[in-house]
Image: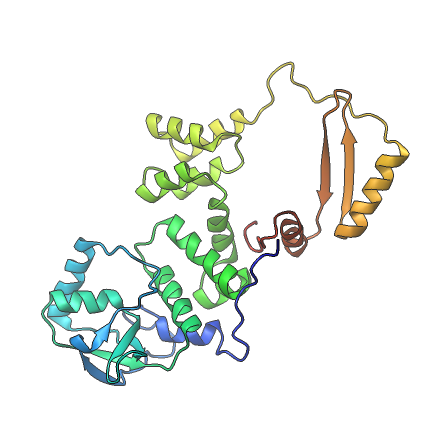
Length: 304
């Protein structure tokens, strides 16, 4: 079975160019290029939401707060729209659906817009980027946004870090959270666990069980780290069996695997019939290649 390859835009404008359109900061940072002025003002009833908007839930409280701000100061950041493919004279919202909804609550009749001629792939990409930029995203939503950008559009962790003004380690640590079981991710979404708690649980044998203990005991991150470390310590009497001396077949298998993977491979057989296979990788690119070979899915940027 072949895995689906990330979509490529060919001569597309690139992530940095798209980022220039979706910056949602209220004011430019020092030395930053000032935000573009709106191309025009459009009536609210001529706008329609993006049917592929990744974000389906909008906080009523947050919308009310934004509506109050719009009543006082108006819509400061223009919406990004594209001409509707269904009806001439209408526009589809690419970025800014929250501002559109809040403007309706504030009983505004018009909003400023920037009109862009974007294809469907760019529209989805911008929608994901805009959601990542939102300050109210929980760590799981942010991590899933990064994963979408990497899987759907082939962006690397380095490109994301540069374009989104995030550190590479921040993105890598968030992506690692997606290794956790759904039960733990649900606690993280709900705010029952912090990102620090979740990171401590990643390498444990039973993250869900430990998460329940952390929540019940209201443990701190440091306490959770100690609990996770102790849970991974082998019990007395469970020492690893002594590896057997390697025979010619085992050495030949090591050589074959090393040649196929392009990495050093070691096989250890224990006296009880169990054993382990160790693959040594040189860098993150090697690790990504190994993950791709094992699962058919690229995991580039998901590890520190």
